[in-house]
Length: 110
Length: 114
Image (spheres, rainbow over the protein chains, first blue to last red):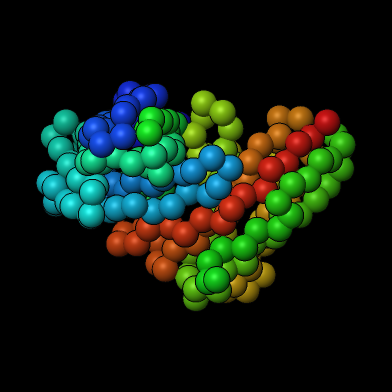
């Protein structure tokens, strides 16, 4: 079964706006990761947040993690057309493998 | 460029045919993974190899076999292809499991079984 579930499933925004997407999961985790997938390509690792961390930044990306609510959010600030992609959260439950959510499609309109 | 290389990129099989998907990484990673991606289903783990010499089943292993040929190569075999195996297959590698490192993905193999 899918561990991560992203919400909303599809998002369309204007260039320059912020994009926020959420991910919920069911079991306890060691860490949570976010990936980007451009159309027809493989996934690219964006950021990893450990279970004892609450917030992490990487460039225009901001990730939060709330283990009490079993949820995470990914914020992309000042979006660009190149940010158009699908975004996946993935959870590590300590079994040496990642479980991926269904993905969140983001379209940034120039 | 360093990374994960998958071959072939596209393949069409007839039901019942067999084939092997190849994956190689040149980053000296210990762990390797095979996922399939279907519309609306996200990525589902087929098999993985935590280290050279070990393989384990993932979420959807039925109809597949794997071989960790050496530290660099991890192949996925379909012995008797079925239309339900039509999918995009991704190989990934990681330095050492998932604790502190992300995965590096290949560009995928798009497989159609008719």
